[in-house]
Image 1 (cartoon, helix red, strand yellow):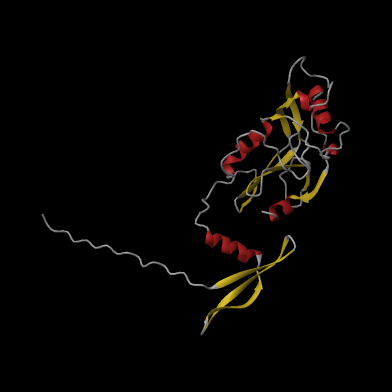
Image 2 (cartoon, rainbow, N blue to C red; image 1 turned 60 degrees about the horizontal axis):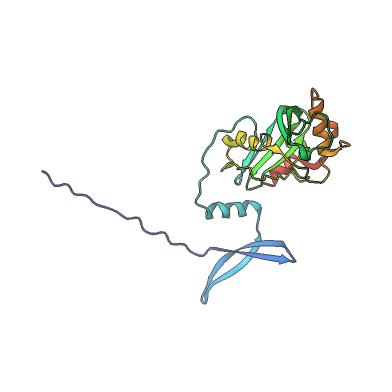
Length: 246
């Protein structure tokens, strides 16, 4: 048998050198300013040189270099509006959905309640919605019309139980998807629409005279052909502002 010679080469370890410093200036409880400084060598050792304000682009570059996680390529479905920084934004057009409600959370004496039952359910019209998930938080907003939202599209408070004025969602005991990837939008949507709506959270989520409980009680009692967008309350933000906050 012929002798086979092999050799193994080991890569030289990379040496990290001090190159820049970031200084944070705080006033009260809020961060006021962040500056980035080059490190200057001197006889006595490294010295922090003059700095300049830390830009958003530079801060993102620093964060990307600090993490070893690589964002894998993914198919972006037609309803995905934005993706970045561990967050996802997508929309769903207005449609009729089968929703379930805890009878105790709806208006007392509403028509259509099953005698002695604790759940009311039915197919009702719902407005178009915009969801966020991931590091930016699980939130939902409504929008008017059925076209794909654009950055200029005005957003409205979610006219739903288990929701808040800022779009926040009370998840309760619902098990949320493990990731906020484009392929998981349906799973996130199901967590919201296929769970039982249990309570009104307070705040003005609709201009309907009965509030959120009255709105859905009325729709369950006499389903409409389309959701009444006139009862929606402005969230004072656009889709564009939501994307910029990622």
